[in-house]
Length: 226
Image 1: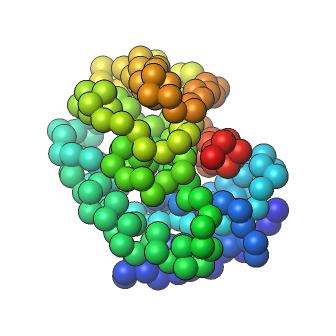
Image 2: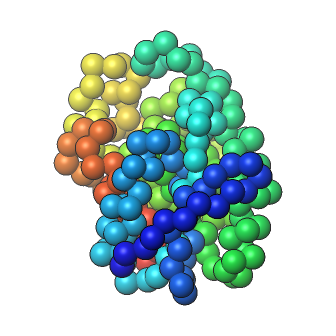
Image 3: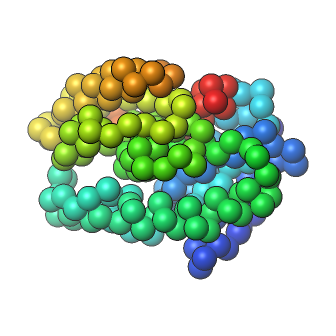
């Protein structure tokens, strides 16, 4: 399925929209410039993997380390610290994006997903909102300081969760990020213990390989499990 992108402005923020004429699922993904460059390929990969029709909404994120971070944390790589802007981003989605999606397509399930820190944001939002039928978390940053204690103390509100990781991601020299393999295994165990439908998929390669295709696989699975 080939969808042509359009731009939608909501609350002063742009969304790139790949709109099907009669979707059965609505996919929402926070994206930076790199993600946006590959959105067409991602949309095509979802169409090849899932028989259902969908509309994909890419929410532009300008300050990645702040807008998607659940709480402040010191730098893990480089010099840029993490902010605490996830609550404001979720509030924007709840106040502006979701009402517009419901206006366009009443009653359709909304799947929130993303890659890397956007994948972590999707998981965090799933713990903090009941608005999402499923969470598509591709290579999520579950190594994030304090994440597993948070997940252990809260209950996932989405019915289904997809998790994935590259098989070389735990092989980094960064001590914090090297914990990602153990962390995502623990994350999957927590979700299954809660009775959520959860799959965990290992992909070949490191963190920066095929991010759009991996996110597409995450959304395709969620469409078939929500």
